Image 1 (cartoon, rainbow, N blue to C red):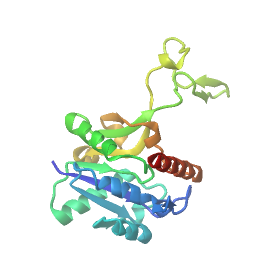
Image 2: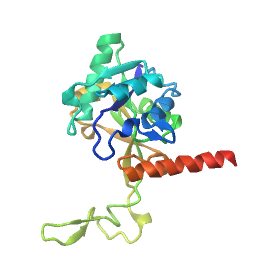
Image 3: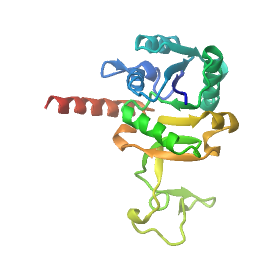
Length: 237
């Protein structure tokens, strides 16, 4: 069993320019994921895939020894990350000769994830070999069976997911989860066989909401800064 962690960062970010190396409480955002990944014993190696020199230099500064150059066609706004994963596996196996069994993608935009979150998702994959992909997730604040609506073709609002009888309280609605890219554990075979993770057999690994925050905007960034600041204060008490 050979498992690699991947940290895939491209240079272009429109929602929050330069976010991958933006300082978060004095440390580049991507450094949080690098440091957490380095503590996960189940990962045999961790690599960074990028098209950006600043990201590459930051990765090396924080201890990443293997940085792969990402081709331009895999670094656009519309590029499929699934294809980036395939590129990483092909490059790694060609360069180092190891047959990869699982790729674990760790998104730097979820900096509050812990080594336990990552290890837990990997262990779930190992205990459930029939599953192709394990995705970290958290229980949704909104539920499409209860308090989410969509507009129909005539402009009227309807509940998103209709059940056989009206759901009158959130507790009676089926459990629904939001995905967070803290960790995607992907079986190599599934990565090469399917065109997207949604075509594969997936299991969810729940993590706490406060560790699942995915930074996409300046407001998200400030929110995570606040949480880190509060956590630091609690440690001093």
